[in-house]
Image (cartoon, rainbow, N blue to C red; front, top):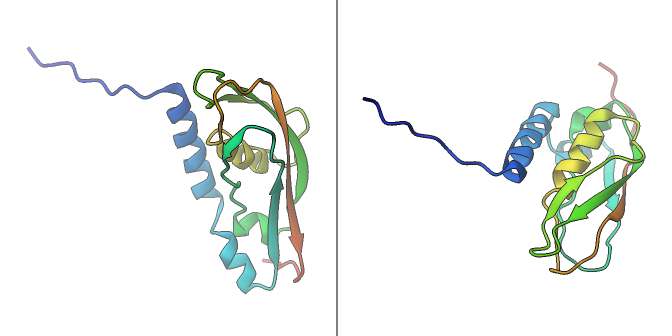
Length: 135
C-alpha cells in the first residue's frame, strides 16, 4: 500500500502563487523600462490601519506598449489577523493583466487586527517620459 501524501496550501497562498506566475509571464521589471527612457509609476492609496504595503509590479511589456490606467479595488480584511482575504475590481484599469497585478500586490497587504472592511484602494499605473518602443 502506497502512502497518500498531500500538500496543504491555503487559498490565500494559492492566489498569490498564481498571480505571481502571471506577473512573471507578463514581462520584465520596471527597471528595464527606465533603460528605455520611461519612468513607470504605480501609485496606491494608503488606508488607515495599513501596516504592510506591497506595490504592484509594472512589467516592461506593459510600459513599452503604453498600457496605463486607474482602477479601484475594495479589500475584504480579516478583522482577527489583518490579512486581506479578498480583492474585487469595482473599476478596471482598462487592462485585465494590470488588474491582476494590482490584485496580486493587494492580497499581500497587512492591516492592524480589528480594521473594518471593506477598504477601497485606488491603484494607478502611469508612464512618464520617454517614447513608446514599437516592435
